Length: 147
Image (cartoon, rainbow, N blue to C red):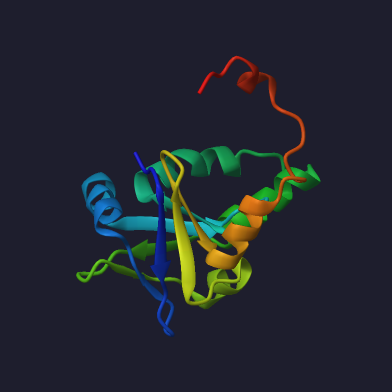
């Protein structure tokens, strides 16, 4: 399970070091094989262990191409998907197209989301945290949730 948030840096070539705790879990779960793709609602990246991606890919492919929202999701999720491998130094190289999509520069945030991770530019992450207007209505599923 991927939990917590981690402030990390990316070098000029687009490489970032995965924090040790996260890297150990990734190596255990998928031997360091990842799929990184665009988030459909936010300008950040989704980082999936390869087996998790293989579970959701058929569901994405099965969406109707006649529905504009579904087609956009397919284009972003599948069109931006890149298979990556954690190298021997615990780093991954984020391709330029994904860096541009998410506005990634030097300072990043790697945020655990249970079965996957999100990769944000630090500035966008902080802006998202400060945005109280984008909350909308609470889904019914959350009404009975007690934290």
